[in-house]
Image (cartoon, rainbow, N blue to C red; front, side, top):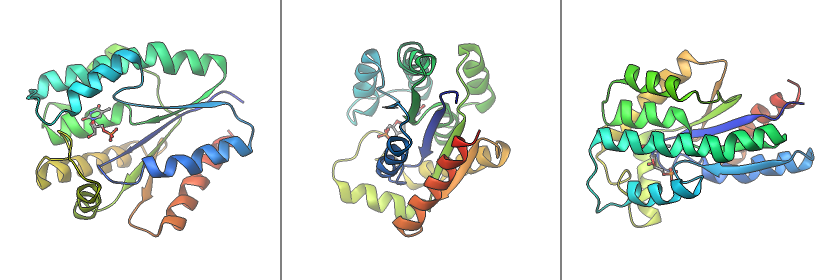
Length: 205
Ligand code: TMP
């Protein structure tokens, strides 16, 4: 079986990170070798970019933010994602290209077509499966606020997060073969069951 590339997407506090354990448990059970990584911050250059990008006290224009996210992604793909897929390791990435379309395109209102053409220029691999964790923005933000200090994105206004959620839902509608919506407003067991089913489908491909 060819190594698969899985990405997790969603607004802040949507449950993507907490579902990681059920994904890795499933891969372990199948004796599949894998790595778990994330964006921004999957490579060593990326870790430095992440610190800048999330710092609530740093002012960054939408255009610079986009360029830093894309720089992080290209380095991540070259140094971590492709070498692992080539070695036969599955790659599970907490965020990837859909985040740039949703956050910089939807949230910051930059031209989505431009973001897609920059992504094409970077020649990025296409995920085999993207799980989009979806729930109403009001619920997700209350979860985030309960966690404590807010980063540069988390502290944005409600409308910013609503635009991101809507862009994600549009992306899912237009890429229904790749993107599977996981309803994270459901009880955790039922949500994790849906995650499991989506991953198990990959085993037979
Ligand atoms: P998280 O990985 O802890 O969710 O934090 C990363 C933040 O960066 C999150 O608010 C989403 C944001 N982000 C973008 O705005 N664009 C991107 O392309 C990526 C990968 C992340």
